[in-house]
Image (cartoon, rainbow, N blue to C red; front, side, top):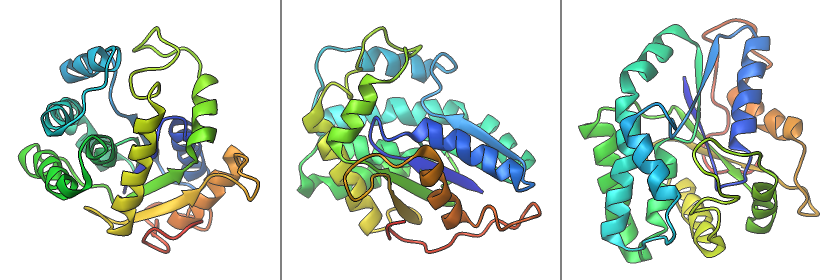
Length: 240
């Protein structure tokens, strides 16, 4: 299975991808993690680095399509390696995948233009570049205020010397990205989606282990004792 972990900056995707891999291995499954963009590994990712270190976020259809090609190109360069991982593992966890491209570029255009844009991006990623669709997209849903606070606590990154990259520094844009993620889950765009609520009733971040419990429940990990027994539970955008 390919399981994509999605969400706005600061949602804890990298942490959950790592924990999900560990849980899968404890359940007797072979697992791997791939993080996109693959900074420092592909030609397109170097262009993504330049973009995220820019001084102004360009909005509009032209910018959205150009930027979408950078992110999609990074995955295209990684396609053969990704397919090899699929052949050799029961579970491949993706820290961002096509869903991120749909959400982050969809947030740059007006709602009336969104459907056409995401369909164009999906055509590039899945049909032109031949990338395999995720078997499940997991949206880690975190309120903007909580996510922004967590971004400030991130350790230094390899792709930027800034405290916040271009996306992280624009709160209004990230709020739009979250809205588009919710839009994608409601229509189960280009595959099944589940939403995991990452805050408690007081809007405090749940523990990473508790969030991972919810993700594993969706996948049936922990109950499975043998490889090849992964099963998606409760497909759709229902809260965990």
